[in-house]
Length: 194
Image (cartoon, rainbow, N blue to C red; front, side):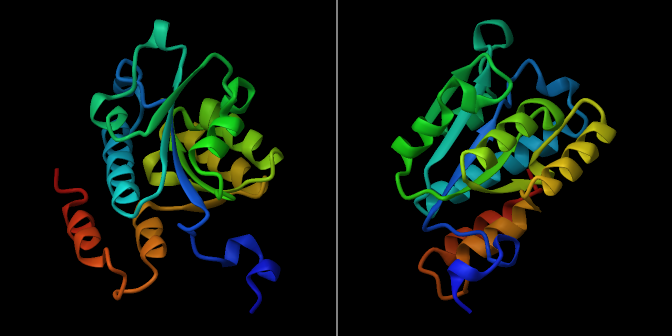
């Protein structure tokens, strides 16, 4: 089947035209996030895997002067971190920053907090800008679990594809013959053990 004609939701998460975006995992915010520790762990897993596979990793920080930086272990895995004031990072220069970081990127794998605020508005902005977006549900969080669920439903309705971290991992790899399969498998096996 011609990939150009295949509906986006039917295609695997691509890495050749992809990039990982991690939205607002700020240290001071995370203790208030329902399942925050798991969301951070999944984001770190994704960032390590993306770096292993040669994908660009970008982060955003909402009002860092007021809310502080992203969790240090995650921030150090990002190639760049965009400070922002708008809830939609696209309104603070995200799209040109994405194109500079990964000119080939047509697909963005996104995770972040809070799912129903900054993540939601940023993904909607990316969709309006013409990007295909996969949202990693188990690496996202909100203070209230209900808000997380509502955000995922709204994003799916807006054309984003909702996925899990391990789904992304195996779709990025495509086959056990991938040159990075063994080191990636080691990361996958460590996932959730920390």
